[in-house]
Image 1: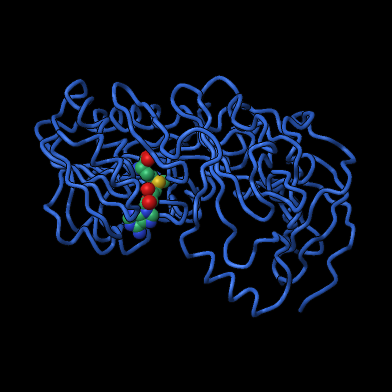
Image 2: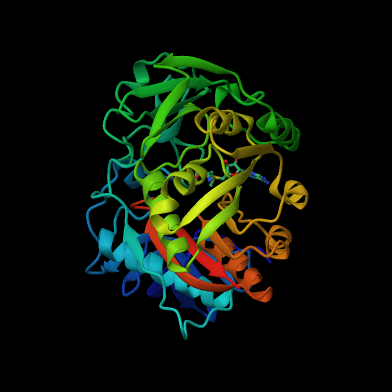
Length: 426
Ligand SMILES: C[S@@+](CC[C@H](N)C(=O)[O-])C[C@H]1O[C@@H](n2cnc3c(N)ncnc32)[C@H](O)[C@@H]1O
């Protein structure tokens, strides 16, 4: 049953959900309220009333604010952009909400009871909630102004976002990007800015995203097609550095968004493997390995942590990332395989150690089953979505793998997103 969705409701917010909204109840239903914090009384506007069990809403007015509510730290988010959805929350409190949400999905989806393992905390990454993002993508409106897309609309918000590192957004409107295109921006290891214009997907050149099934079908096909890149500023390959290593990554390629993430995650993986007693010579699978940041960390830091890497199979689908991996790891015993993890790992030599760092959807049950079937001594599993991370860890448990340690990181400050890393052994 679909009901009109413009109603206003006065609600007491009692909890926080994994997607970043407050949880309230009304007439026996859960209401997820964007922009509300536990402990607040708000007037909420219903935005989606089409589900029997729950409704979605957005804060219309705060009647009794939480002590943790602050002036929004991001002007773009305050103007409706889909960037820093928790920029109105004090950073420490936002981290405690993230920890709560992670524990909740680990319990509900993963089946963990925290009897012999403390709930993971969310650790700050770097020293500031702003100026951490080294890559971003902006849409260009019909007047040629660049901005972030709206959270709940096709609007392009031209107010500046607080997340990008200093200089990344400087003069973006003067780069010459054409209306309807997107600008991809990346900062290099020395703070230099690189930018390119991505051609509009299919017929979406005017950026209007208008209605109609035929248009939607056309643009679905067009979205998956490669899009031409026109250099706007700097180079189209960007140098990144972790430890003593350098990588050259296409401005459109994957690199962790937080400038400190590759170093912190590399160190976390090494420490966690040492903690579970990995030792001797080990063959490693670096799954969803990208440009090989974890491979490099294990090769370079293993000895200090009690083990030596004899060889690595790295698997990723992205040719650009694999080219970067092959270049940086050219003289190391790393075999980079292009392909999906699910299809590729059956043919690989059994590993002692697996690092898996899937995209947001997680590794999935089939891949977890296949990793477990190879019987590695230790698995470091990384997740940027709490729910899929919990689901994957729960599946490892069905194969006898136990979580020996986990850590959570505030890798996307001022947002509800977190990164989590677990180490598992048999
Ligand atoms: C979260 S990134 C991690 C990359 C790398 N571990 C790092 O730290 O830079 C996920 C990677 O998975 C790759 N990927 C996505 N789906 C995949 C699949 N089905 N099989 C293999 N790789 C995949 C992407 O190309 C991307 O490089």
